[in-house]
Amino acid sequence: MLQNPRFQPCLRAVRTGCFIDFCFHPAAGGGADVVAVIDAVQCHHPPRTADHPSEMRQVQAWHDHKNDDVLFEKEGVPKEWWSIEPRFFQPKVLGAIPATP
Image (cartoon, rainbow, N blue to C red; front, side, top):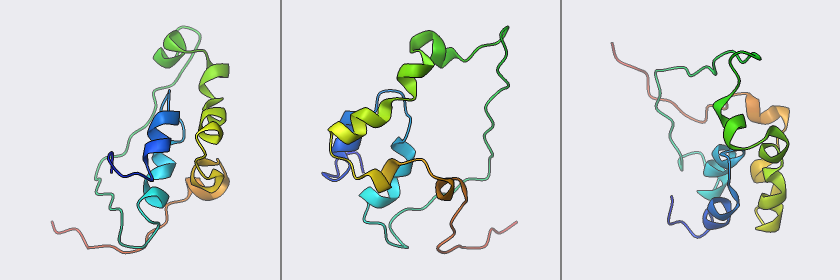
């Protein structure tokens, strides 16, 4: 995937990690059998407070972090690949293999 010419503009655009995960499926062709996610572990961001800020904010301010979209547009990455919409936050199962105990 990292050498896929359709994915190269995404790699050139990404600075913070924002939006890159949304690009895998469409860059691979968008079919039902082009990407597999196999994961038995859920990931949760730790709570952020004034006493425990995000480490990302120490590297890059939030206002810069959330503006990666400008870089994706500049590289010509189709907006439907990375644009944040509610549909991106709902899992979409195109097929599955049952887990075995």
